[in-house]
Length: 233
Image (cartoon, rainbow, N blue to C red; front, top):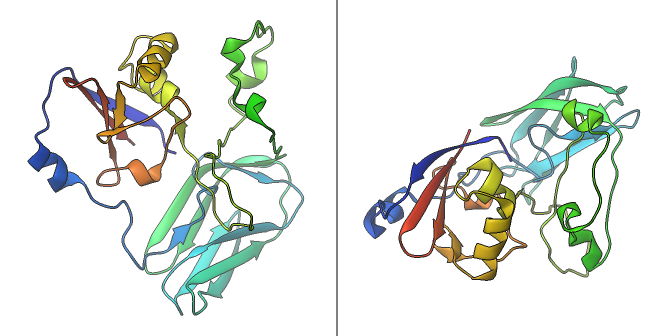
């Protein structure tokens, strides 16, 4: 997801009527759309053909451009499309443009190595909950490491899309400063007092584009009286 800013609202400032008025889907039907793994700040695998896919209106012409090259295709009868760009060496940042009836511009895209981490419940165990102490954070400070967290779902068939987003604890404590610390955020979640867009959420929740109101806002709530509007920019 994009970067976040915020508007702090310590008391109940949104009426139900206003909330229902601004609540709308973030994308319009029929527009060009991408699988969720394609976004600003993503990393594409170096020295391998680059496959990008998504959805559009059946028969719609699509053009994808990146690093002085482009590829075109047409959405099939189900609205699915994909293109393959030539392999690129490690580097960036690049911009990726996807044009159909509408245009999507992805920024700060790197080309490098991708690593897939998967497993059982231990994959959700946070480093902050272990005795590990970071002693060399040079790579983190250089901002060349990007992380995409996939929401937990079960399926027995391959999928052409996944859901990802911002960790709810990070959103509450670091992205917004709505709560003072990650510890306070965890306690509030365990008390079942946190809501996203008026829906109760747990510690494993990820805020995704599907939570956006008017393609920009997310309503965070603690208890009945404390509200916070997170603005995605």
